[in-house]
Image (cartoon, rainbow, N blue to C red; front, side, top):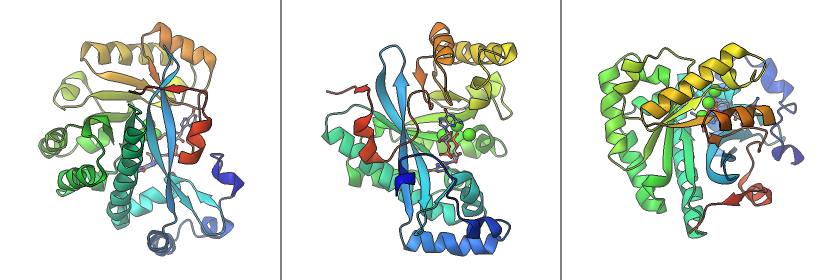
Length: 278
Ligand code: C2E
Ligand code: CA
Ligand code: CA
Ligand code: CA
């Protein structure tokens, strides 16, 4: 399983590819994947570029099929979402991520773990209770858990969204808005949501320093986040120039291939970064 260490998907099976339009087929395969425990989590470090220390990890779902092909999440999460299977898979992700977090605590590492939530999971009334149980049973500390949601999940029934966010925050965890800038958002709208962090979408970062417009937008998001007392993270950082730009604009938390691809847990120890510890 050499492919597991690399975040490449070229082993993606032809069989599944042919069936890409066959929702039912993927749905059946997803059920089997749940039964046979074919999912695993990868972890991408979040680096503080002032010190080059790991501050946390984002968990990213991987589906490793028995023939060793890795299916990219964007190929199956939409099906999992529309069939509702994401609720079950998402529950497993939470347990796995919090067990990982508890293992880091046990090693004295003061790092955060970020978990992506799907829309179905986020609107699920049982989510706060589930998170509370998972934290309690795994011993993971809430203050080191970050839940990532997207702007689109906050649209629609905003009152219900705010209620849910408050329920989650009551547990002591942090909330992050993923892919920030790609959805419909405004300042007044953002102020209504009790969130702690913004993640600048890769689409704004990827053409820095060639695209002046993207640089202006990125700088504006960083300035806005600071004004609103929100932590800001840049994602998809791939070059030294991008790191310099972010450093100069006071965005210190960064994720991207420049530092590391998402890795399996056993590969994290090979990373050349120090980790904040007790
Ligand atoms: P996302 O949450 O925005 O995750 C970031 C994606 O960018 C990941 O792709 C990551 O591998 C990739 N990435 C990180 N650094 C770089 C970089 O420097 N350059 C480039 N080109 N890409 C980079 P991945 O793992 O394929 O995940 C894609 C999307 O699938 C995620 O986007 C998220 O929306 C969804 N997803 C992944 N894991 C989960 C999960 O556990 N639960 C849910 N609900 N969704 C997930
Ligand atoms: Ca994310
Ligand atoms: Ca993102
Ligand atoms: Ca994204």
